[in-house]
Image 1 (cartoon, rainbow, N blue to C red):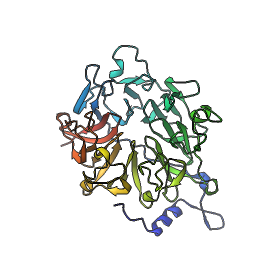
Image 2: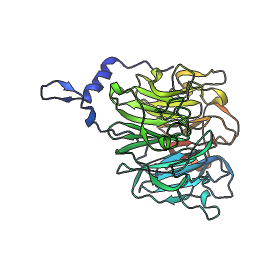
Image 3: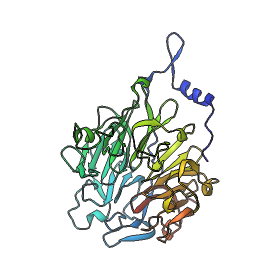
Image 4: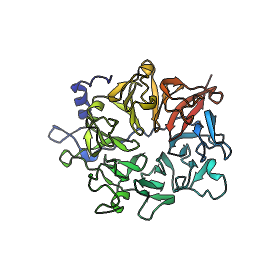
Length: 429
């Protein structure tokens, strides 16, 4: 089960370390002067990319004749990659030079480039952006990039229960457009149909679909495009509504398919909002939460990364331990065939003696990368998205092998709808 909370003394130590001494000698937080530097999930050594699973719309990046891969396959055009992101049916890759390449479904502009040439969406192609990118994200039908100067560009579209929402009030954006709020952004995160932005001074902005509470700023009566302010209030990034009296600041963000996680700067509390029908955001009430609340099951632990799928969440702590939360069907929790839904963060026994460096949740599948460069997968395998060579579901983590993985160490993984993308580096002797 979840690790015991840290002692209060440690929490107090963190608070003091973020304080400054006033002229009177008393210690006082200078809240407005903080500068947030979150982990952007990049690698220091550039690598190559492999994909597997369903490829019917080019999301494997292996050309128009490759419809599926049951084992990891190298995308030969992709080298010097430092970050990857998997959308519902497309992928975004970041080169060490700051250039962006995309491939997959481009029906609503998620690739951010011209794919009028037949088959061009099935192979990686460059996206034109006005600067060097340092982070990329992907949702079901949108993509986004954070530039080194703090600007954010996005392309594609958001969707809600009524269909296409557009990306901006102009509609779909087939090329990158700037959506930066009046602040320097230091991290972005994409859900299926929403985007979360963290500013350098610790503020959280959101935009996109609000129907499942994932924006944290629209109540249950005003969360649709037909609300009082309409689409304009959803598609423009605005501050999530945390308790004003607390003057909260945040140091990290993560986005699940229909939810959002935000780490408070001073005490590390994890605030959550969005869909919780299977306890996937760690709240006791099995309902949708439209406004941010602290999740107690996340409290007291330093989380390195959080990744959330349709109905489950994975969390990686600073020691490399992997915890899981949410729905059990298809084996996505990795807790064995006889487990129940996890209402609290639960340590995965099969990985408890292994240190992991990365995790990812697909729609109903899960992945973990170990410090020795191995990839483990579990959950739904109906489209070959686990990389096991079979379409069977897996209820406990299994080691993924393949000829294209020989001599390589996996360093990153990202789960899409029915496909998976991983990043690897060549092993040194």
